[in-house]
Length: 124
Image 1 (cartoon, rainbow, N blue to C red):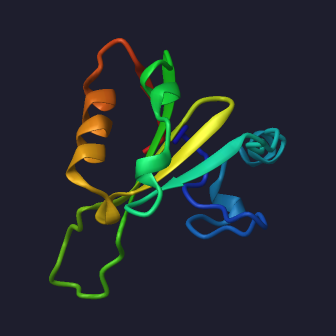
Image 2: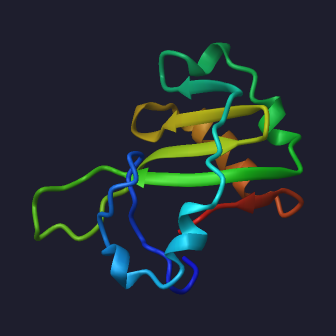
């Protein structure tokens, strides 16, 4: 995150990680345009993977990339495996439910992610 910007702001604009007075670039932050994805969203899991054409992901020059892990309420477990992978172009997005997918579709995803000719863009 840029210096002076809050780490967490929910959809209603409520600060979750920083107070307004802690954000030196508050005016610049709130003036940033809101963006909305209006493309098709496809959920991929073991029930939908067989009938999906993922060639649009394999052919994309740039992909938006994000992962989510399953939350653990057990404080002794520090990390969880990724549960959701999101890959998107400007027109379409795929939400992969990784824990509910076959090895063959995981292999296709791995091939996409390992392709050095595809630029992966994300925020961490």
